[in-house]
Structures are given as structure tokens and as C-alpha cells.
Length: 449
Image (cartoon, rainbow, N blue to C red):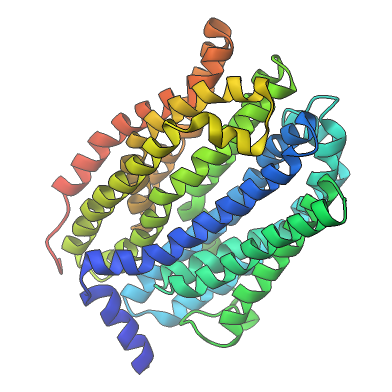
């Protein structure tokens, strides 16, 4: 109990900026490594041909589906847990952690079976062309075999972060990520396994990450537990997890749909366009991980202190996270903007891919300045249990704004519309968050009330 009391004191009394940095640095490193091994897949696959490079963009939509389910259970469980721990209700927190984990594991098994049975139509649905299809099917089959591990790993990772144990989460993610990069080089360059090597590398690394994360719970490094005896099938508990996680499901689910629509729109202009947009999205995600990592460091601080009724710390954390995230993301965006062609060339040295990718990357770099504000709002509302605000705001970037903008812009402006659609959606999302933010802080109670 002394260890748990120390954890509570850290989350509710330590300097907010120092605490967010402490929790955010391991998370940012984890995000960088995750983005890096995704980029490693793109790099090694890009050495095969343009169609193979396009396959990574198609399968990105599948991975977004799996992440949507994982993040739904993960953030739904983690948000409740952080508030329960802030209220010192440890036994309740354990019931949520165990139930969320096994729901995710079961969901992964179901998606694996359905995905394998419907593999070819699924690839076409996600935007594959006939020339991309053989590569996409091979890559996707490996990803589907890792679906249970991938989805339940999301839950374990997020629970650890929401408990304030971001270092343990980092160890789990980075171990798998570094292994993935090593296996990419071994399977594809040394053994000549082609895109199958990339898929196997990802599948193996996901299982290794899963085992490392599970070890943290087995060794009782956490307040929560994954022991089967804590599972509850009460609908109220399950619905609390799902409803709290809906913003993540909406965000990631719409990311999958938007990737599918983007691939289909770009496919009109050939495999080079699909490959270019896939590469641009991966580079942008790598830069975006600056803000996302710091924002994820803010989440447990927001949830824990909101549960403990220390509301001033929530506001202080929001302002600090927004300021730091904007500064870091701004610097990274400028560096990528002025070297856009060189970054794209790393992944596919094809003149058509580079020429299509540069304007798209320029547009996204400009829009990234508007991203930290929407990230901070979304993460804060989800962490403190404001389900409507979080769910609505999470649908904007990849859904409510992006999908109609993509369809209209691609029709009116052609390829240029496809290249700029995401940037316009990001800017509009940022401005939509403003009234929600102002209203929340205007009504925020005083500490302890």
C-alpha cells in the first residue's frame, strides 16, 4: 500500500510540467519507435517496386481498423482506471483492467478469422489495385495473424500509461519496434523474402511486445491486474469501457475509412499516387508523434487529477501540453517542409512518387501547426470522461471534415485536391475545438468541489 500511496502522491502533488514531461518522454520515444518501424517497412518494401510500396498504404487501412478496436478498449479502460485510482478505488480499477484486456483479446481473434476468410475483397475495399493486390494480400495475412496480440497490446500499453507507468509501456513498445527494424533487414535484405519478410517481421515483433507488456502485469509492477478472477460480464462495466473508448474507435475507425477513400481516389492516378500518399502519411505520422507523445503524457495527469478533484492541475497540464506540443511540432514540421523531396526519396526513389508527394507533404507540414490544440482537447475530454465532447471532436479530422473535403476536392481539383484534403481538414478541426475548450474551462469547478 505504501507503493500505491507514493504513486498517488506523484500523480497529484508533483509539479505538473515535470510530471507531464516525465510521463511524456517515454511515450514520445515509444511513438517515435512505432512510427520508425512503420517507416522501416515502407523503406524496405519500397526497394521492391512501386506496387509493393502502394501495398503498405492499403494495409495501413487494415492496421487502422485493428488499432481502432485496441484503442477503444485501451482508452476506455485506461480513462476509467485513472479516475478510479485518483479516487483510491483500486479493486474497481482491477475489474476494469482485466475485463478490458480479455475483451480486446477476444475481439482480436474474431477479426483475425473474419479478415483471413474475406482477405481479397477486404484488400479491394481498402483501395488495392489489381497490380498491388498480390503484395497487399501477403502483407495483410501476416498482420491479421498478429491481430489478437496487436489489439490486446494496445490495452496493456494504455493501462500502464494511465497508471503513470509510462516507462514500462515504453519498454514493451520499443522492444518490439527495434526487433521489427532488425527483422525487416534480415528477412528482406539478407534472406530475400520480399514483402512476406516485412509482414513476418511485423507479426513477430507484435507478439514480442505483447509478451513484454504482459510480463509487467505478471510481475505485479502495476496497481491494476489482468488476472481472470477480476473479469466481470456486467453490462454496466462493459458499456463504461466501450462508451468511454468510443472517441478512439471513431478516430481510428474513421482513419481506416479515410485511408480507404484516399487510396481509391489516388488510385485513379496510378500506383505512384497511392505510394506517394502512403509515404507522406507515414512521414507526417512520424512528425505528429511529437505532439501525440506529449499529449499521451498529459492523459493520465488529467484523468488522475480530475478523479482526485484537483481541477487546477488539469488546466495547468492542458496549457503546458499545448505550448510544448506546438513548439516541438512546429520545429519538426519546418525541418520536414524544407526537405520534403529528400524525405520521400528515402522510401521510394521514383520521380512520379516524389513529384506527387512533395505538395502533399508541404500542405500537411503547414497544417501540423494546428494539430496540438485538437489533440490536447480530444485527449483531455476523453481522459476525464466527457464522452460526447471527446467522441464528437474525434470524428472531425478523419471523418466529418476529411471525407467530404476529399470527395469534393478530388472532383473539383483532381490530384491537387487529394494532396491538400487532409491539411484543410486539420485546420477546420482545430477551429471547431475552440468553443468546446472555452466552455469547459469557464465551467471548471474549484479544487475539491
